Length: 95
Image (cartoon, rainbow, N blue to C red; front, side, top):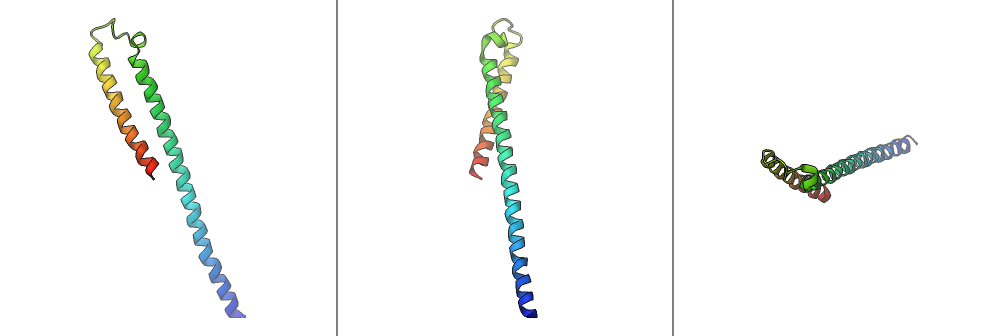
């Protein structure tokens, strides 16, 4: 009888670590999904910002020649950021 008790307790010991691993994996997956959604929100906001900057009525690019180069550099910076974030999204999608 003592042998049966030992065998049963060892069976319980192996299933518990497996459950812990599965819970950890689920938690990691949830965190990755949250990160992915955050990055997608950032991407949407950047796209909206670019659209606003490209609209001449919102940026007044045609009214001020002094700020035109600054605004164009800013647009280039935003485009580069979008490319980087797109790369991040593709990488996270592949996980």
